[in-house]
Length: 345
Image 1 (spheres, rainbow, N blue to C red):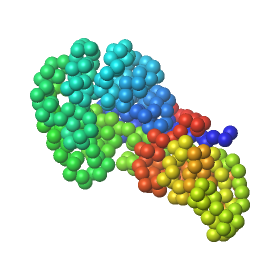
Image 2: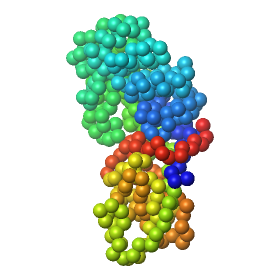
Image 3: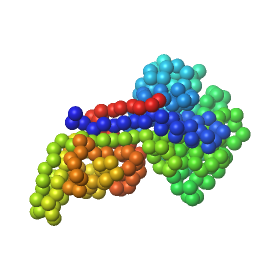
Image 4: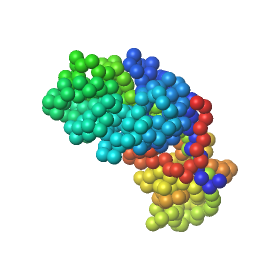
């Protein structure tokens, strides 16, 4: 088959969740937005629910609706984007919990679904989503009278443990929520690793579940093998790929593999990434194109059927570093054309 194979190790995923859960006395939820960071929200969420996760977080109501059909009744599904116009019927029919971000969303939810559950997102300094301290101070009593299920905020620099922003946001969050009889959540993966002061009543790990930094102890979850479509000998002086992105200085044996930027191999990997034949690394030559990449296999004694881009030899963050980006982008860019295999779970 001329498509790569993306293998997702659900046992490793569950092991990562349990390891993070062991770091805290708080409830441990799971963030499965963006199709579980590109790895498949259905299989991932089912495995985590089977392991004991009862709270899940997604970005949009559409994601939440799909997840409800996957998980059925029971687990709580929170929506980071809150209650947007047009979401009311899905929120009501499927028992979803929007995390309200603004006065406008509070008004919409309380008028349309006065008895429906909700949470509130607070802005403690990230200036992205949530109610700012002055807004919260003015409306807090009105909101509390409606019985929110959760008060949450999001850390901007949790992957930098020494950043003063972490302590600042912790202080602001405590000022906004101390003394209120409502469950609280501040920590995602990075915040969970910062220690108990950041845990409150619930932590909600995301990228750490999938093998990404800053959880360096994570087990690898995603494995990506790309098939060799064709092999050719390139002579010194000949070029490879678009715009002569690579010109051979000596004879090379070059393999063309079936994957490109349409499959999430971003163009920033051009001329920088490595793939693996077992333990042996093979350099990506020239530019990443839409459907294909070209790789130097001159040093291999046999022509491989496929090469590994993600695996134990190279995790998502190592690959991301080569591209000058972060593991989140590598994971969430993984394309739909791969043959997906799920093991364990």
